[in-house]
Length: 194
Ligand SMILES: Nc1ncnc2c1ncn2[C@H]1C[C@H](O)[C@@H](COP(=O)(O)OP(=O)(O)OP(=O)(O)O)O1
Ligand SMILES: Nc1ncnc2c1ncn2[C@H]1C[C@H](O)[C@@H](COP(=O)(O)O)O1
Ligand SMILES: [Mg+2]
Image (tube, rainbow, N blue to C red):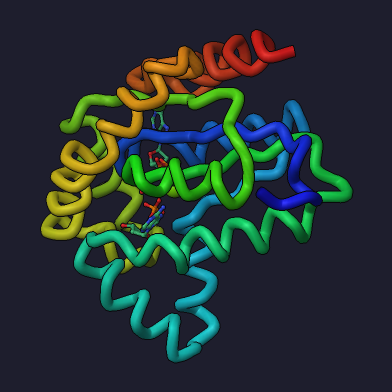
């Protein structure tokens, strides 16, 4: 466990692709001033840097597969440490994607106090991602990759939710409503922490 992060308030934000994790995290940042770290955004920044590592990551992400655990965990840890002196709490968006990622995070960083499970139907997620793909420029917002990302979500990431349910820290948020309606439930879950 890292010393600088030992008292950090950590919230995992988990849900399918396009469920609305990033959208809700932005609203949490605006209301609570927490630090939002999206593993996908960190990886895309590495790809955009043009580095050799970025090229390898890009090929994996274009196929809708998961990048190696150590790569993504190191990036998250580094980004958390960089904000440790000013952060009121961390929203870790898109991580863990599999149970092993959660276990390693706890060994190297610390334990989450809440897991926000952003839940939407698969048809809703596909619709939102196809719409986002019209403008996002994301190489994985296309029909073929969306299908692979969804399949992997149900196979690898849903077990993460069951794992943390056993600890009693999961709050399931229905993400079918409007952004503001969803956020009112996200805010209730965060307020319950205080
Ligand atoms: N409640 C909502 N109602 C309608 N549209 C929404 C809602 N929440 C998000 N959206 C839109 C915004 C985006 O264009 C798209 C996907 O949302 P976003 O927050 O980017 O999902 P996400 O972060 O879970 O996806 P990914 O895992 O692919 O990064 O759907
Ligand atoms: N936690 C992660 N582990 C492995 N791979 C990841 C993780 N977070 C993001 N990725 C890769 C694979 C995803 O398909 C893309 C996009 O992520 P997103 O959360 O949808 O922005 O990045
Ligand atoms: Mg996102």
